[in-house]
Length: 131
Image (tube, rainbow, N blue to C red; front, side, top):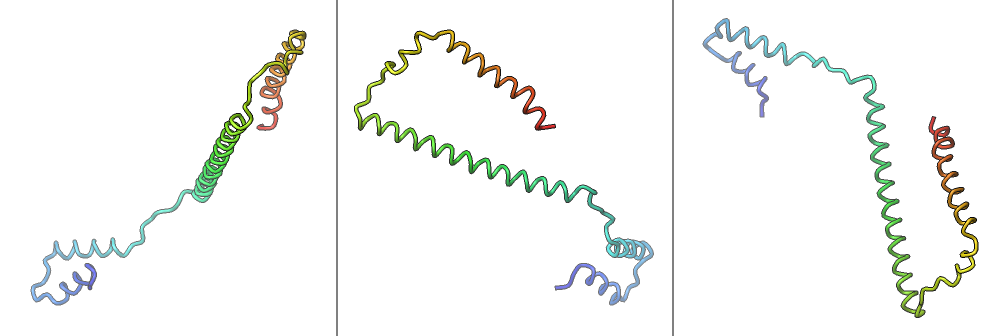
């Protein structure tokens, strides 16, 4: 099958009636335009953007895989917990924590201390590692 260019060229050459001047000019412009390579250049950071896109896609796959395994682990833990409670005739009791009732100041101090460490970590330590 001939391309449009070849058919037009063949028609022009085999035509017994000469092309008029307007047809000749249009024909010349079309084939001049078809003969030129398009002037297009990729942006200078094209390769970097493509690499970032691929890395982002891989990172999202990795996060999805991690979320799957975390979900599966939580599900397995809950199934095991339900099985253990059903199999051992478990009864919940706070007896093991009764000794803490004599130390309310220590409990409050521990909570405040842990919150202060978390705040310092967020404000100082993590800021220094990201900069």
